Length: 222
Image 1 (cartoon, rainbow, N blue to C red):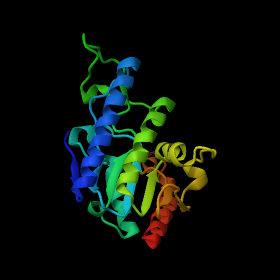
Image 2 (cartoon, rainbow, N blue to C red):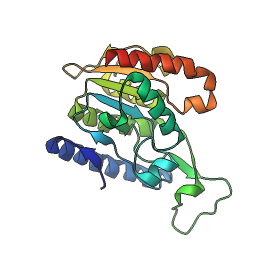
Image 3 (cartoon, helix red, strand yellow):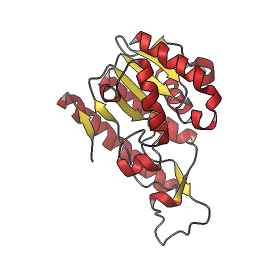
Image 4 (cartoon, rainbow, N blue to C red):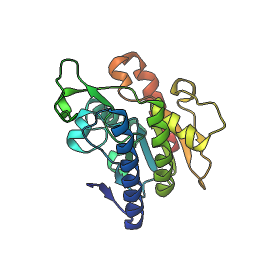
């Protein structure tokens, strides 16, 4: 398992164990469901960082590089991180689901063994079962990291957070909750701050002013 982690070695060992358990559980589910995946991408950064960013799942570029937010959405994220007066290298970045949410691209031919290369796959939404499975391991990861701020990017990580930390509350969407900060139970002093996923700006550039406002507001907290 290749990990791009730095900092406290005890935390790194604990996170590695969580990732190994998650991979075993996920592979069992994927074998049963017949859903294709070309590989796992783990969290990266300083395990003692005060800020953790959580995305949905890696895409084609992330699988190829082994780094979360390495593609076009990552370029947008890097630009907006600067608005929060932060540097990417000072954050810990992870995903809710740590394998590519993929299916065979239309027209691709299956092999005798149902494995496809990364380029012959297209993206798909996360299933409720995948989010529920990932949420328990994400909770363990966050409790080990114990950051000051948890920033969810998009609806999937926000949904996973609600499953893990607010099980009795109705799940809010980013549209309902973005730009609002709230204390996260289970920690001494950790806060949740949801924002839109940077990929949403690819499809909806008109949302950029709102996204900018939320990131500047995050910078004021930091």
